[in-house]
Amino acid sequence: MVDELEHEDARRNEETAPDAETTRAGLSELEMRENLVRLAFGGDESRFEEFLNILVAAVTPDIAAVMRGSSVTGKRWEDGAPFDAAGPGTSDLDLTLVGKAFLEHFTPEGFYIPGMHTKPLSDEHPDIAPGLLPLRERLVAFVGRPVNIQGTRDWIMFCREHLMGQPYLTLFGKLDET
Image (cartoon, rainbow, N blue to C red; front, side):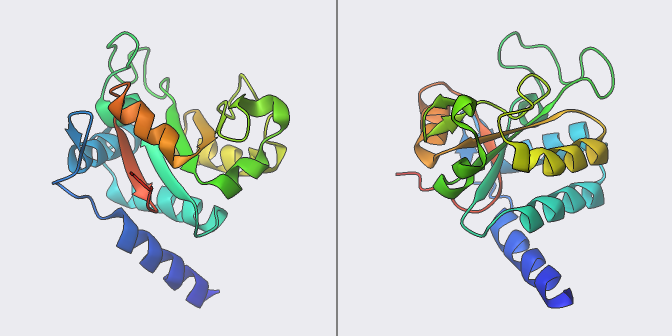
């Protein structure tokens, strides 16, 4: 068990170092990471690290994790409202897990684009990925706010960034950006 945890920590640490050079839709990975830690984890780096450990332990090594939305930008994409505009704990975290194998967790009704891009597992769509409910519940309890889990392919993330201007923070793993 200790060896597994050390392996997961090494994988996560190797793959999550923010790259000040990488920008996504105008924000650097470092800026987005700082926003996420400050806004969603109260500036507590160790809580963010624990969140990452929970995720790494829950997914296979071929899956990448990214965070999107106001937790990394500081404001809502739709209307520019600041993160937690309605009070502490009111903004959700938009977690996206990227990889073909991850999509198998979702029911056919859980897709926007069949086999490619899912709806978010959320309070609005609680039945679209029954096997992921324990992970979602654990993350929600840990952060004290809604955590929506979406599955997608890497080309969707490319489109969101380059065609829609939506930045995302890579938490761990590697996306094929070609």
